[in-house]
Image (cartoon, rainbow, N blue to C red; front, top):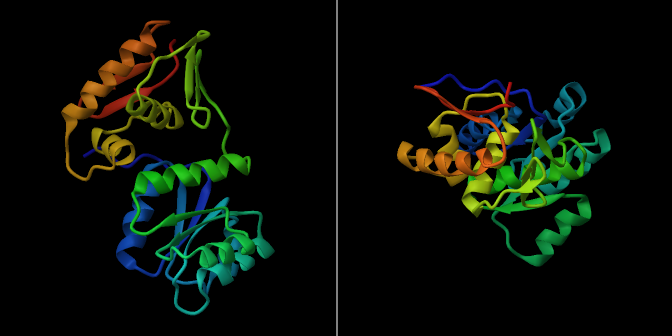
Amino acid sequence: MPSPRRADGPRLLLVEDDAAIRESLGAALRAAGYEVRALPDGEDLETELDAWRPALVVLDWMLPGRDGPALVGVVHARSAAGVVMLTAREAVSDRLRGFDAGVDDYVSKPFATEELIARIRAVLRRLGALPSTVTVGDLVVDPDGGRADRAGHRLPLTATEFRLLCFLAENRDRVLSPAQILTQVWGYDEYADNLVQVHVSALRRKIEAHGPRLLHTERGLGYVLRAAG
């Protein structure tokens, strides 16, 4: 198994009382490139906000002590961090309470990890904590705009190929294992290397139609997107 990739992206603070969710979600966020600290409740929230200064806080609604909506005000009073709320509540009045408090986005439980990561990414971009486009050599990927261009040519990508390219671009210059790609792009837990190989090959052909190789295979490790030269 390849070693976990180095996390040096924006800092995220995860506040979730369910230990299993806290552990698995924290691992997924680190695999996506974020620095992550996790808390089981809001007791030490002020301390973490002051000392660590996260770019975004992922808050569970139902927490022991102060609940998620009550903690949103704490986040905004102590920092400029964005807030994504995890909730099983579907009532409009509940969501309005959160938005009135300053929640940037909601993700309903149960949720797909890749959806949460995409929503976190979108909020971070709105806050200016992530660039709106990613450039790798002469390849320009616009995740929010849903487009990718190379040397001035629009790449005709399928939805899956585009998600794959976004993940590779946002982790440019890092080797990503098939398991990491499956988790982040497809949301799969089981190993299915052939699925990754097929889509990487199709994506590579489209990228290379307008220039030298950018998407490389590192035998026994995985795949990496890096500028030619």
